View 1 (spheres, rainbow, N blue to C red):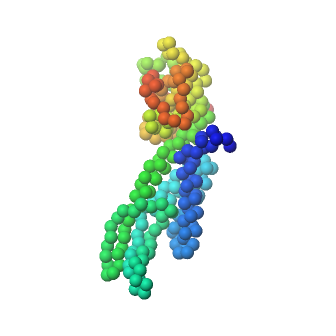
View 2 (cartoon, rainbow, N blue to C red):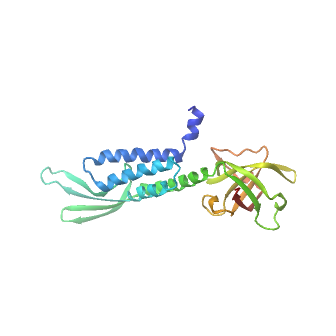
View 3 (tube, one colour):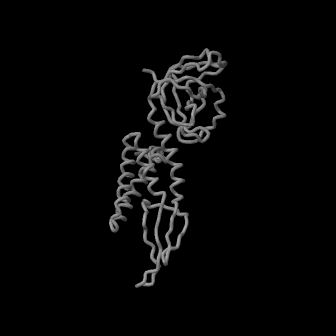
Length: 251
């Protein structure tokens, strides 16, 4: 693997599952002294989720979400050890897998302090998972052949339909990672412009799901000579010719 290929591979959707595996393995070794079964099971679930991700199985997201949810609550108790005189903190419920940033409440009972904490780090990681999920399902669409038809009877581009194309890349447009770049089977002409690509995304704020058959999507025509970057953010204002269209996989 050369440097360029390595940089292309080194994306958040590939690095994060590796992080999950490493954090889970570290947690397994850490738990061997206490043998806290729920923590061990959660570690194995995290490894399973990463494995399913790299196998292209959509159920990876359930494993990873449970893996994160299990780490949300951390409970421990702090007390003064009578024999050594040292303040000791012992976990009561702690499934954290190597990363935590705790915030919570303390309750005193006799000479023991009980700490009920929320692992705030998990909330931020969940935001990453949403991005990873969009990229994961978008990339599974690469290579699909599509047919486009007009959504309304009278639109700016009515005379262009129908046309077909193939999804060739998952790209980021104006910060949204769920856009797809489609190479048209035949160039289309509108006014004085020639177009050989279109950018598409779901009408909803979700990943395009073409298994549902025909659905309404948002698309932007990409003129010949105007490049769409595969690894960096693209400005949507560079592709002003837009419309709603129906799209479905060519059988």
